[in-house]
Length: 453
Ligand SMILES: Nc1ncnc2c1ncn2[C@@H]1O[C@H](COP(=O)(O)OP(=O)(O)OP(=O)(O)O)[C@@H](O)[C@H]1O
Ligand SMILES: [Mg+2]
Image 1 (cartoon, rainbow, N blue to C red):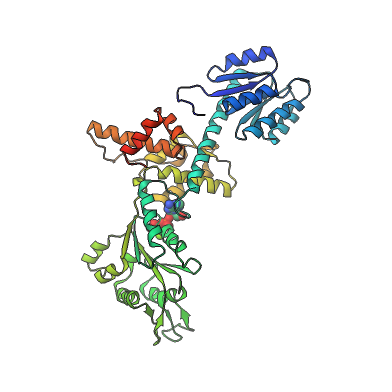
Image 2: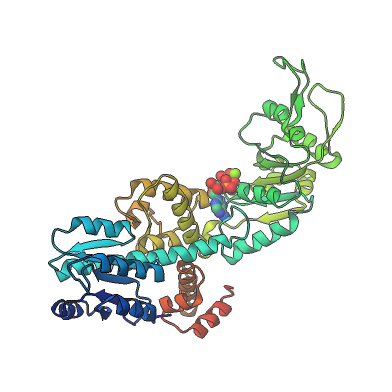
């Protein structure tokens, strides 16, 4: 059932005492309050309203001094809608049953006598937690629909990248992945491998920037015994060892110019010679390269061979920076939170609204890697279940250029709001429309207008 933004949220109060019934009804006029006096009417109301939150007096008729009917009601509620947040109301001093109720799946408990102000806070919090869990469910659904294994993305920009990757993966075409640091070049290189027929063979990655020239050469090609001082025994290089699989040449832009001719020869003829060896060894390998450098510029400066460039760039895949992937930052944030919070059994369950806005608006110069690190750190540092904007420590420098034409400003803001709403609710159109305060058809129009899919 979809509720309009201005409609009150349904709350069910299960209470048999007529005096308390009316007191509570008046106390919670911020909700669409429904009163049930027994189990049957509680369950019927829940079926009708799908109320996210229920307060449940454990002492219910026929024998209000006994909690068994209360427990039965709790179970009936959770059987019907397991996500319901049930706040159990117990008699004074009845901790034992309160704890038992929690064990059975109640969200919280509250001991009589009732102080409406305190109970209201508990109820508000229950609604809040319920809302976040709903978002989370929506988001994990999006993740399950993730375009490629291990790749979290929902923006049109990244979905296009993923589509290209799916197409080229089964071929032997040499792909060049271009993207800023932390955009996921290695993740995508692995995805190419994983989608190819080579997936059961090795994926060998070598970072051309982090190894000195002479070591890089022996790393790549291997060497024969006695090829140089210290070459105590024959050693197989990365290229040969990945035979049948995929070789990922990371930071190819940093490959020393002296090694580039040898690499070119390998790419053309698909044979290698170990250092100090005479034998030509044929190698069947798929090559994927990546760099965050401007190779054209390097070619002009004489730092990169043009012929090698044409060899490695049979297809070029430009990976957009995170700030240009509409809605993906929030999606990734949820994904990292879910994974890391689970691993370390942290109590963190979500983000405050302000934190999500900050994630969406930050420019992420370090891209996905930076986001991942922030979330990891925030999970550890968080004081509460919700990660706050302060804990994320995203200090935005406001250097962003905003259009000044009013129509453009409006459209940009509108498109962003739509994207944000959609990513908050995992692409559920009715919920996104509710959040935005527009009808579903209007939302469809907006989605089409901005080409958001
Ligand atoms: N789309 C994505 N979904 C999930 N995780 C991602 C995604 N993109 C990147 N990551 C994660 O972000 C981190 C950085 O990704 P990766 O190492 O692939 O980036 P890179 O472009 O190779 O970075 P660098 O240029 O610094 O080497 C990794 O931990 C990776 O798992
Ligand atoms: Mg990398």
